[in-house]
Length: 364
Image (cartoon, rainbow, N blue to C red; front, side, top):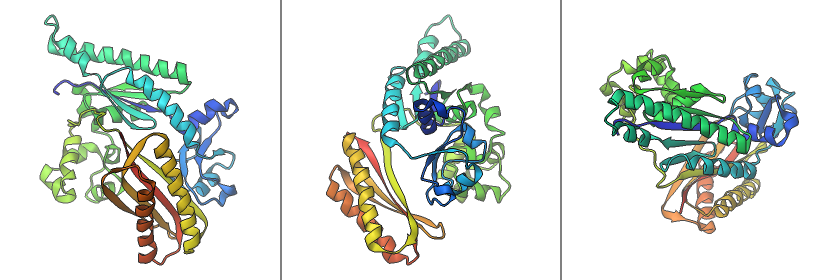
């Protein structure tokens, strides 16, 4: 695994871009996909926003009411998951043709292992190792351009691609390539590429970890690199060692499609904060049915069930149940999900703002 070439492809503003493709008169306008804003009184969140909408400060996960205030003239659309899934399937079939080693990680992103270019060229003795690797990256760049062009030609959607020596670098490169770009980070460029990036750009470092690092003066990956492995393990446990490695551009995780693990989720925000068990479980039954129908339609099984509960003060908690073995049984999903929701209702007497259900699905 010494000389790997990994490609990460990420579709640009996937949901809004599909909506724009289906409705050309939306072109160039700020598109916000998510809950009904109800003229600023909506209680859901933004699922995705077009680049035009992002200019107004709108981003995924933002309360839809805030998005409305930032851009009341925007095009607000409901989530059309059936359409997005269909388009995703078409795109992933294209991506799979470019390498036998692929990993689909979500509806709109995937990895390809292009290491075979390196192996083939480095076995030709007329090339030095350095020259062979240089040619390999050039070939990978040509393939990436071809992939982007094919997706655009067939689906009329743009994508961004990053190429690097491992998954972490490839993903960071694709982020820097957005929108509709291509960025290559070769092994000798990794250190300089990572150094100025903010710590929260490193995959795996979330808001809480970022705040903890900022509290000791660590804001960039270069500064994170200055901490010893022992210090990071002391602060974050075993995951601290992973942070230490990734800050140095080290990532040995393979591109693998042995088990494509995805999650299916639905959530609902109540019109008014409530403790009415009849209303709560009535809406929850709907969520369970919607999640199950999607799993059933795609012939997936589930193993981990997670229930989300957000209270009136926006405090949000999750409870999960992992089954002993994967299942496709609706009655098991319904029973275990309701048990988790009941725990929320029994343990906390605050009014409830939102409930959600998510399952990890395993392709059989």
